Image (tube, rainbow, N blue to C red; front, side, top):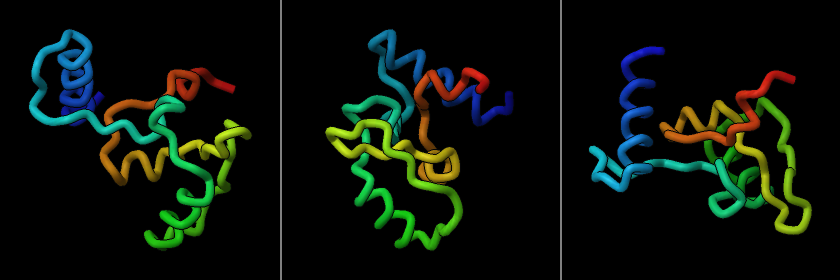
Amino acid sequence: MNDKDVIKTERVKEALEHREADMTLIDFGAKRLTGIRAIAYNNLKDFLGIKSGEIRVYDLFQQLAESEMQIIRLFSGDVIELKRLIPD
């Protein structure tokens, strides 16, 4: 774990303990509530010039895309969906 990861971990811990963190947490699709629609996600990738990866829809009713780690890192996301930590 590098220094940046430690800072993110502490930031999340402070938020969960209802204490003020050094900055607002960035959640880019860790929950359905903070998800992004597949069409918007595709447009975002086009705007950023990212051609790699496939857009995976994980909520068919809402048409939510599963954010790729490349995008989460690009936006300095602080949290990810826990299932991503479970090996396939």
